Amino acid sequence: MPPEPPAEPPAEDPRGIENRSVDESGGDPESSRDSAADRDSVVDRDSVVDRDSAADRDSGDGRSTRAVREPMTVRTLRDGRYVVETEGGTYVVALDDGTCTCPDHAIRGARCKHLRRVAMEVAAGAVPAPDERVAVCAVCGGEAFVPHDAEGPQLCARHGFEPGVLVHDRETGERLLVVAVTDQRADAYRTEEGRTVADYATNAEYGAHEPVVEVVYVDSLRPDREVGDAKRYGFPASRLTRNR
Ligand SMILES: [Zn+2]
Ligand SMILES: [Zn+2]
View 1 (cartoon, rainbow, N blue to C red):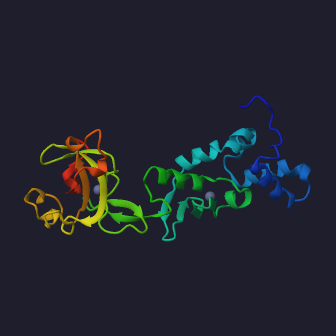
View 2 (tube, rainbow, N blue to C red):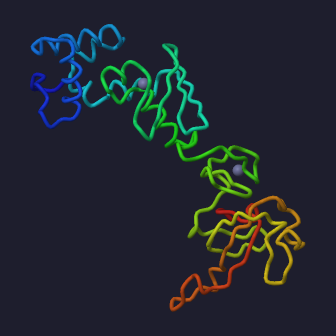
View 3 (tube, rainbow, N blue to C red):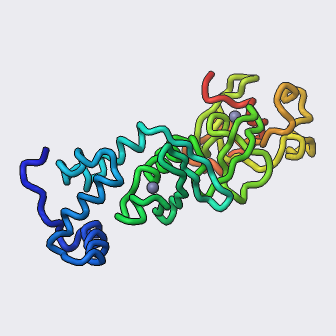
């Protein structure tokens, strides 16, 4: 509980301005605080907590808790928005715009629990970000969240690689540095010898449909040379591992 009593929010607080503009439509500005609290008690089951602690409501702690605890199902729409199903209703969240169709957002302009839940699920990798779509991982067949315009075979977060990460070759144990994940399949990517990556006997155990990952041998790197100057080799994605 904050030591000081709830005070009128400062004029530069954008949330305060939003509240005021809503309250003005209701008439008497002196009663705006009470009417806002009344609305809470109608809409919000936790209104007692919220009314007793204006600081909690303003910082959104109550909404964050509900965003985590309440059962909600988040699904993606093709246009990058999300449908959030709750016991109390179904709403549409636009994460980029920071909007939701629920009353909490529509009436109070609040960063509601639905917006928070979607943001959490995106951060946790449970649903794609607004600029991503769901693809199938070429290694495990699981969901991979990739940019809308991504082409070729794709990899999930577990089987993908960021450029610059150190990996090992499962066949030889040698240490490699990932330079790029290409959009070409192992049976399409051609080496300097003119053969496809999938054509090599050492790659027979790995999927011909997997994207080729370009690497350089760590032992070939020299302090006086750029990584880009080292010779690149293409591997099927699942032949590389972050662990030995
Ligand atoms: Zn909402
Ligand atoms: Zn995978």
